[in-house]
Picture 1 (cartoon, one colour):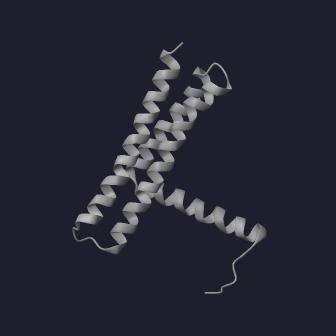
Picture 2 (tube, rainbow, N blue to C red):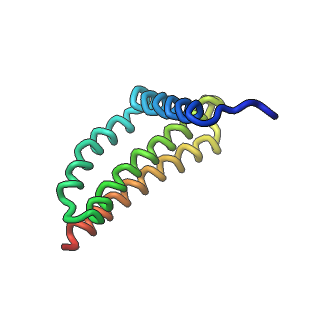
Length: 121
């Protein structure tokens, strides 16, 4: 398929707008994303304050942002599965469960990194 794709700043503006719509949609539709965003709004400044240097600050803030990224991907998986159909299917349930497990692992990583940085002093 040969279609004209936008280039340059047009592509950047469209990509930014798609990202904005995704963030707004996740905030509007996903309670988990709102909760994790509220946590991030507290944990990010706290991590910046608690870190003694740039490396520690990065280690404390990065997993907080990673949790938001993984939650966005999990929400995208759920939306795509729900779009296909709402009837119960083993693979649809598995896809949603794996997405949820990814969020759990990101939260586990966050806890481990914060413990190692803050308790390892």
